[in-house]
Length: 140
Image 1 (cartoon, helix red, strand yellow):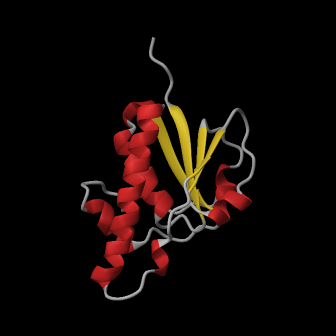
Image 2 (spheres, rainbow, N blue to C red):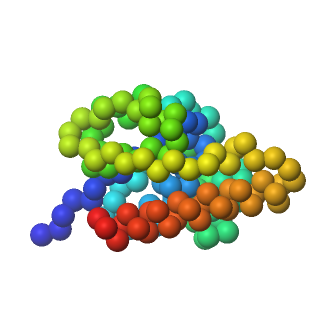
């Protein structure tokens, strides 16, 4: 008998960088065992440098869209992971037996300098997310 995939939600403030990258990684690394989604306290758009940083890893998140948390409030998730303190403070309670985790990561949106200097910050956060997701999957 095949078990149903677990549902996981990644949340950050704008659903433009960290949560989008996490969703992309989980869709690839979690395989058929996980259904990954992401949302933000507010919705915006997927940041072009997040798309570029993930493309460097062979993961295409250009088709993903930014969603507001309000759109998902009636859904049940097995795991909800907040990726910034603002999201953790404002995250609502979800239906069902939801495991909540908090992985506070730097917001690359504030990076300054040349495109390459900013991309370096996006890559750092991307690599941190990949490591955390791999650790999470090993323990799950």
